[in-house]
Image 1 (cartoon, rainbow, N blue to C red):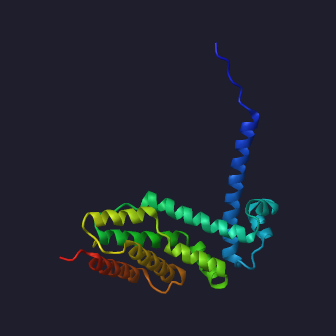
Image 2: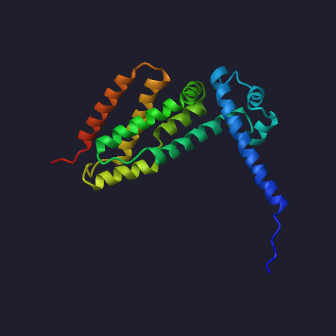
Image 3: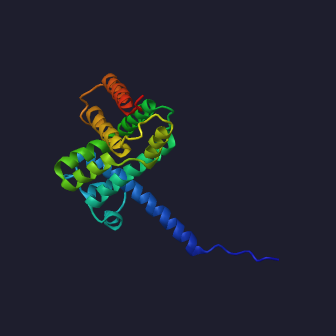
Length: 213
């Protein structure tokens, strides 16, 4: 008869500790975004962030080292969430124009869902060189799946063989960022204008990338 193994107390304690750390980090990230958005990055204090999160201020320094580290963690979190949402909700299209339109709308909708963070990142980019460099990098970062989708469209004969897809995708991604900035960052164009721009841009890019007959 096999002996039952008793559960190890230290294993349970280790798992509980990890769950507690994850929960605490999540609370701090959410609280930091709220405080940064309300008070501004420079005026925000780690004490105020910890108070809103309901945790000890020392945990900010333990998990993120500083206010700057906390801000960087927020940026990384939103980048990871963007990739996750891309893979889960943005379905592959059968035509080039539909693919471009879908991506532009997806990018815009993501910005709308995270408007608080987007405006915070832009405001910090204006004042802080390191943040500006990060924002510029993010503006050009392309999800691997998007690159693969365009390659498949080229294999189907929908994109010219001589087209530089890396440059094309840079253009689309930066344009999506600029459109988000105009629509959600400073709110200078309305939804109907956004839709017209998306349609016109997608049609123009599709014609320019189509194989020559």
